[in-house]
Length: 326
Length: 252
Image (cartoon, rainbow over all chains, first blue to last red; front, side, top):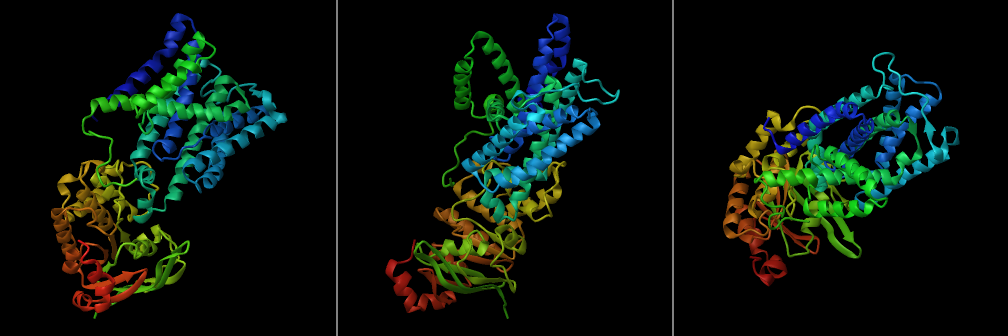
């Protein structure tokens, strides 16, 4: 494998993430651990969104709903004193896949801006459902009595353990994404993003592939939700709010839509900037907004795309050759 | 004796009040190149879209290989063996030429719920794709990103993608559109090479190409087939001359 800048970025990123707990204990600032976990959880969420948005051209504005569903299943299980992770986690992932099948089947009947609006609407529906669930805390949310229990296998209430579990799962998700997008399935997904009419004409019934991708992404986001619930030991409807979905979109755009590791970088930079800027001013979005605009304008492939285009010369132009359509 | 591979019966499609195809009937014999000519707006591209399934017909029947395919969606028709090219180039711009064609091969190699193995390493996709690129003369351009190919090469790539699906019938919508004389010549020789081994329904404005290639010609005016016959018969047909050839001169 040739060492592209993207690979280099991935190696450096994970190396840094790996030593965060060491730094946290040396400097005696446990907050770093907290920050690192949040970064990686959101990186999993952004990674999953990129699968459908970056590679599949399906811009979901409701992706955080699956994070929320994953988290809520863990929370609701814990509320009913089902604390075994061996039950909670598969149940949460199953719930996410069922919701993803239904939501995907509805949303994928539309394209473009309608797809965006329907995913947004479905997610908001679930948000208000969460708000109205008085039994499970409603608006105030639901504290977890304890984290998922893996009966001695791994103790998630030990914060370093949770950190490294998230670390490994993020790596796993990245690896899965890499295999997926290069597989036959991934080629179909990218083909449908590029030119759906052509896909139909050469014989692909694209809907079933897009729906499958939607479900895979939903389940992966659900995993992020499971981890988030264990991280904050708390679930609330805000996790599903459309602004959370917007955050995920921003992370993907920031890091580089359609580049494998872009969303991870995007999530890391997003959280870092949020932390740094909100320390400076309450209105940190005033600074973050223009920064995002600059990235989108001047680095169309996001931060990672910026690196790649500066490196490679085999893609001399973005402009389509003459006579091409659209 | 030749046999009918495609039989179109009374096909009709209107957009608002405008009839794009009107009671259109035609028969394409197996192994032939059947050209459809006609002035702009005669309904040629609409017909292709109806045959490929991209447009639903208002009425009429399409019999392919003896079976009624009128109700089938484009992917299903592709699986039956109908391949089309587009008047306006329709390819995957972000993919290399080889990947474009390999995806077409993949479409006809079982389902694509294969999540793990890298498609780019699969010889059973890559080898046929290379063969198709060779057929259209793009073998040495295989690894170029499609958006960086020339217009003429895009048109060739379209043909390669269609060929890669191993079609029984090729629907070619103006494969020479926008080409210079030299590129047109290349395309004519590519299509000539397919003659005999492939059945082709060809829409084309380049009359030199049409008369050089076609076994049968159908003339379309206002969505209706006003004449059908061998190139010589069409040349001699007075109705065609007034409606099309005579009036406007040859299109190029």
